[in-house]
Length: 290
Length: 237
Image (tube, rainbow over all chains, first blue to last red; front, side, top):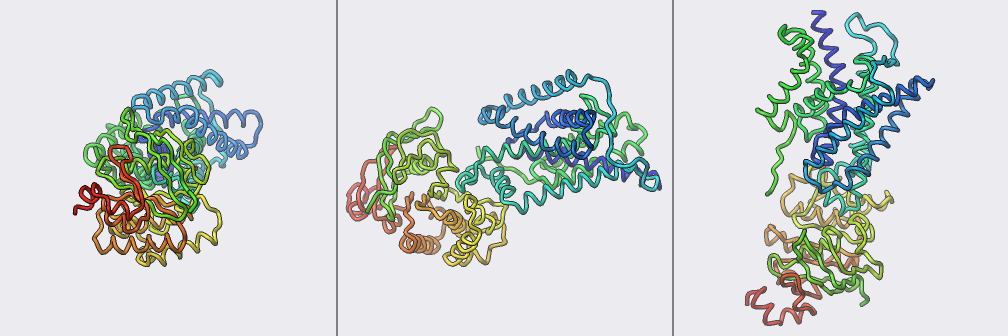
């Protein structure tokens, strides 16, 4: 029973991180209709920035919030500089740019901070909660929960949040009520980058810091986004927790999977959902007129 | 009456296909003008060109201020509210949130609340539907919401793209009565695009007839009503 509880709690804690990445992916998907394959590398790069600040003597939480702001501005800049000119470019151009971004962030991080695995500090005390789950995992869960709550309130209750939703749902009409749609897309990128940064900084103490740290995690994030439904931010969050729990349970209770084949679970989930319920659990069917 | 909007040499194209071939027209302050024409004549495109939603050339001046270089959002902020073809409501948001978004470019909270009530007084059914998702409204209600949302901008000029489309005759009559009231009581000028020519000429004081991207006839509604070509082709008698 203890093992079960342990795995459930770890699954939920990891799920919170997947939920964040899934949400970031969904936000950009809603803006430009594509999966941002570079989401993980952007988060990794943000985490390095935070690490560099902490290594330079900046207190943890100051570095944490500074990184969020830097990432937000960085995401905004990526949209304005790279994706705005590609606004009406075909899908493949976007994909190529995503791959380019992955390569740029990955090798730049390696070039600046080398490829050696680094430890990343946790702001939470060591030890565990009742022997079931590490205190860092508990803290990570609450930080991400707080973040998700803040994002929810932003979209539900602020004028800009509403405008961003409007711009994503119906860009033409959004323009007609005076919303500057281009800037809303940029804001979406900024927010996605900031959310990714939080996910990166929270998961880094567990997976350790290195240029490829987000590769597997982003896959779980994609799985979460697809399980929840790529059109539904709430679904993506639910999908994140679901994927976290399934991943841990499968790794523990299905001997053939174990800890080595856990990542396969994400891929199986992606394929299964796409085969049987392409819109995800909470997504809506999109009918396109041709 | 003085001029509100002055358009000269307006061309518009979708990719390589040119749809408007140099339109010249003007709208009077406080007037209602209608653009008549068959399917594909370029009526909707004319409105979209004014709002900056298609690639366009030519000059578009609102009370002397040039609009042709501006983006849609900025044209809207100059006081041109566009009720698009197919209504364009935000279907997953509530009716009242749609109205609130209509006032996105304004910051006077009290004025916005007042205007929401004013829209409800024109369209009482919207008040009953205020919390309902816009996508679940009936066609008539959705059109009223679209007009209401445009009014939230406190526009000088209202561009209406086939407001009667797909509505029952009684609802159409009700809607056009209210449009008339808005025009008279608030002095909002209108540019109306309609398939239903007799309906449009009833509301409008001026009319232009568009054929394949060119204005072929223009004049007051009375003179257009008496025009043989218009009568035969568009009014059917």
